[in-house]
Length: 211
Image (cartoon, rainbow, N blue to C red; front, side, top):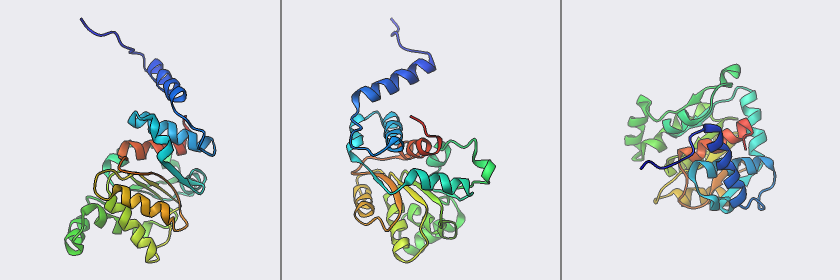
C-alpha cells in the first residue's frame, strides 16, 4: 500500500521551515541575515545542528548586496554551485557568474603547478576578483589557493562564501580562513561538512533575504 505523504509544494515548504524554527537554536547568531543563512543551509542539508558550526565575519550580507548592485562578478569553484544560484535579477546589473574549472588554460595550469584543477581554476579569477563575491562549495584546494593569492597581494573580494567539503583539507582550509580572515567578509562552516547546495543556499539567503 502506498505511503500517505504531503504533496502540496506550499505545505512542504511551510512545514519544513516550521520544523527548522522549532528544532534549531539560533541564539548564537547576531542578526536576521545570519538567521536567514542558517535556515537556508539547514534546509539544504537537513541538519539542524550546523548552526553552532557556522562562522560569520564582517558584513557579508551588506557587502554581497553592494557588490551585486555595482555589477561585480560572482566567482564559483564548480558548475554545481553556478546552476544552484538563483539568477533572475542578475542581468539587470550585467552580473557574470564565472566558473573557470573547464577553461582550456585550467588543465595546463594544473599540470604545470602539480595541483588540482580546482586550484588551478582559481588563477583564472585573478583579473576579476577585486570586489567580487566568491562562492566555494566543493574543493578545499580552491579555498587554499584563494587564501594563498590574497597573501601574495591579490586584491580582495567583497565577500566569500566558503563551504568546501570532504575529508582532506576541507576542515583545514576553513580553519585557515577563520584564524586569519585577511580582512575579508566571509561565511563558512567548521569541519568537514559543506558542499555546493549549502554554499548556494547561503548565497541565495543573503541575496534574496529568504527565511
